[in-house]
Image (cartoon, rainbow, N blue to C red):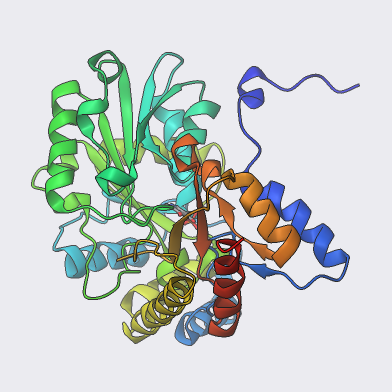
Length: 390
Ligand SMILES: Cc1ncc(COP(=O)(O)O)c(C=O)c1O
C-alpha cells in the first residue's frame, strides 16, 4: 500500500480543469459533441512565421537538440527587453532583469519556493488564477485572499488587508487584465501597491498574461512603468495568449534582478529551460509583424460582441470586457456556480468554468472562454441565454 501523500499535498484542491476533463472525456466517449469554453486555451493558430522559425531551427541548427542553457539565448533575452521598451517604455538589462520560463505558470509557482517559509504569507486576489496561490501552498506558506467584488468593479481594496498580515507578507501577486473577472487597473493602482510593499517590505509580483488581448483602444499598463518598481517587483508574461502559443510552454519574468536570480536558482534544480528551437521561434514572435496580434484581438472582440449581444437577447447583460478572452457572467438565481456549470455540460454539452473554482468570491459566476469560432459562440450564447428563461 503506497504511503499517504504529504499534508501540503492534501490541502491542494483538485485542479478545476482536471476535474472537468474527466467528465468531458466521458461525454465525448459517449459520442456527445461538446462546445468547450472552459480553459483559456487559444483555438487560433500560432502565426506562420513563428512556426517556420521553429521548423528552420529544429532542422538546421543541430545544437538546439542539446540541453539548452537555462538562462535562455542572449538574443531571446535581448528581444524581450526590446519588446518591453517598445510596448511599455521600460528599460531592462537583458543580462539580469530578463529570464525566460517554460510558461509563466511554472515561474509563478516556483517563485514561492524561493521565498516562502511556513508562517509567511502571500497576498493574492480572490477569485484568481490558481497558480497565484497553489505555489505558496506547495511551499508550505499561507495565503491571504483579497476579495474582488462586483461593487468595486472587481478591483481590490488594499485597505482590507490587515496590518497583522502585511507584517508577515513576503509576496503579493496581482494580475490585470484579470482572469477570470476581466477587470483592469491603471498605473495609479500599481503605485499604491508598490507604496504598500515599500512600507511593509514585501515583493510585488504582476502577472500580465493578457497584456495584448485588449479591446476598443484600451492598452494594459505594466507595473514596471512605475518609477522605481524594479526595486521590489517582477512581472511575468507569456507567449501563450499574445501569440497563440499555449502548447509551446514559453513565458518570461522581468524586473528585479535579485528576485529573478533566486527564481533561476530554484529552477536550476528542476528544469533546463526552454527547448532552444522554440526560443528561436519566440525571438521571431517578438520581432515579427504586429498584424497577427491585431487579427487575434479583432477575432476575440467579434466573438465577445456576438456572445454578449446573443445573451442580451435573453435579457442577460454581463459586463463588457475591455480585455482578456473571457466573459464573466452572473448565474441565474437558485444555482451554485458548480451546479449551473454541471447543468450546462449535462444538458447543453457546453463546458464553462465555475466561478468558485477561482476562489470563493467567484461563487455566483461562470467564466466563459471565447475560444471557439463564431458559429459555436452563437450556439453557446443561445444555449446559455435560454437557461435564464427557465
Ligand atoms: C493569469 C494567467 N497567468 C498565467 C497563465 C498561464 O500562462 P502560461 O501558458 O505562460 O503558463 C494563465 C493561463 O490561463 C493565466 O490566465
